[in-house]
Length: 153
Image (cartoon, rainbow, N blue to C red):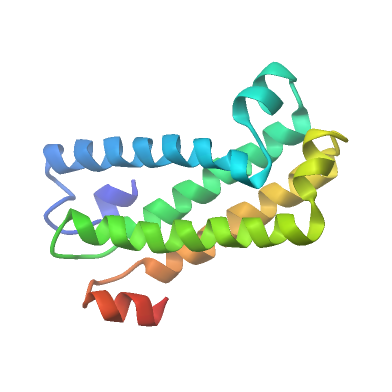
């Protein structure tokens, strides 16, 4: 929906670009899932094998947060696909940094993965979705230049 209504004008009605960005977004999520390990949660170990509901909540919030970061990079007109990648890297990198800072000060992944604290899983999910929405919004808009994108961020 983001690509069809808020994406670049040359992307909105071009099937090739729509498929290209969908594949890129899917790859983006796949890479992000692998990096969740650095933040203390594992999709395979915690959510699937151990059937940890708290981890499932946190990981669901993380997937939505990363999706919002990537979607924000797709909003607006720009000269090419690399502007989407740059904007999405800015927002996703800042998003992971925020998650790592939260983890450093609170050890929330331990409460989720080991203690199976559902409230912590829901709080983490809310934090990750909200920060993904804010950071995605921060990189959305018309592309001006590389420096302007970093300055506005």
